[in-house]
Image 1 (tube, helix red, strand yellow):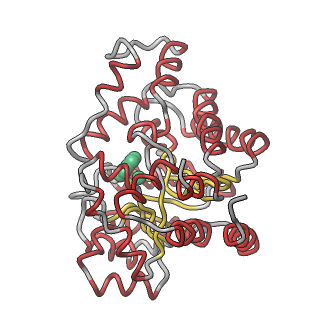
Image 2 (cartoon, rainbow, N blue to C red):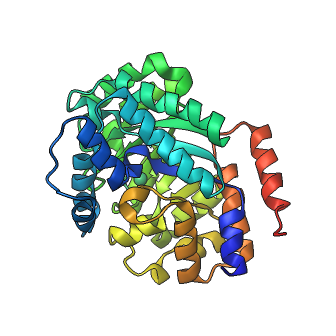
Length: 336
Ligand code: HPA
Ligand code: ZN
């Protein structure tokens, strides 16, 4: 292992863009299907893994929603969450802000309470075991309609103290942030922070809408800003972080060639860029593999890695004192 690789692996990091359903590893998927008496289309873990190849975001989403069918009981969501935290611990992730998609479950008859109770219990026991602090972000599926999002928001109100923010994910093209302006207005009024996937496959205009209409604190992905100097300046001026996911971008053909990825250009301009794993079980790697791939493709330096790690805490929803404590730990970090 060279020195930069060791630095990447060992430095403390926060993960800010992780779909818990996307951390369902094929082995666990098979176990859960077995204990829930479900028959899968695939006969083995290897056969399932063969299917993990995508031409675009929608190809992936079809497979991701099919995989989520294995999650049925509260214990399944608990096991899923704990499995992610155990992986994250090994990568020196010390804080994780985790998305979940309630509509992926409620639409097939699994209650909101079943899903969130399992995840929250997983976060609690996981914190005890790994020390990782977790926050939960509830995403609305943007391919569904406004009334379904309102219904989901209503179900979340009793859990207000356990959900830090609401977000927006699923099929981007044709489903602009403006479709959910009123839902996000209500969420903001109820005290939730907001984030949104924008500019992954969609245009820069969707990033503007997320900022202007949904009042987001950060943008998930955000690559489309690279061709829009005015928007780039705004992201820098307003210190809006972008949660980037290089292996996802490679797998979903957003940037099939990672040497063309805009991460380094944006970082050098002063955009608050972060590195995350998105759906690690489906894209071939957790946070450190994402760091290693993009560092290799773009020739990132130790200073770049340090900045990315600092950004991960600065852009987090931790309290100011907790943020500062971790930023100091990152800046003081040196290899023995
Ligand atoms: N983009 C949009 N929706 C998603 C993703 C993603 O990368 N992962 C899970 N849902
Ligand atoms: Zn995502």
